[in-house]
Amino acid sequence: MFQGYSKISLDAKSRFILPAKFRKNVPIECNSQLILTRGIDECVKLYPKNIWDEKVLSGLMQLNTMQGNARKFVREMLYFVNEVEIDSQGRILVPPQLMQFANFDKEIELIGTIESIEIWNPKTKEKYDEAEPVSYNELAEKISELNIDIRL
Image (tube, rainbow, N blue to C red; front, side):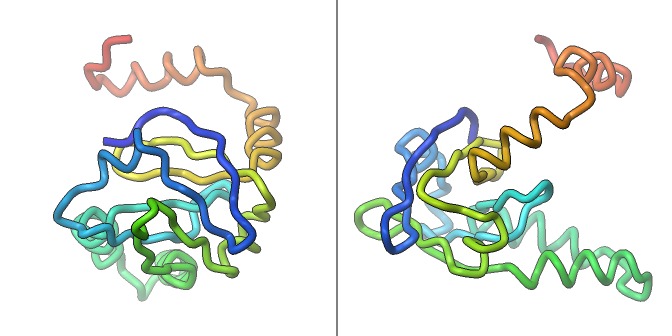
């Protein structure tokens, strides 16, 4: 399970060291194989390969691609998919296509989102947070209406 936050630097070759608090939660069965792809809200998503295969791909395969919105979503999601791996020094290479998509520069922010990690340009994340019209407290109240037992 991925949770927490880290602000880290990209090196000159567009690599970053996956912090230990995230690396320790990469499932052994994925053999350091990860998927990097487009996220929502201009971030990049990092998935362990087994989670990608078991949950994301299987979910995408259930969409009816005869419907235009589903077809476009699958196309956009898969267009940015890159299989990457954690190297012997704990680094992950961000491909140029995703560097450009997320407008990454020298620093990135990693946010654990349970089964994946969001990777943000800090400036983009700040703009997103400032533009978000709903506060955390309002979100918590709306989520409580779903009758899911979350104790905060």
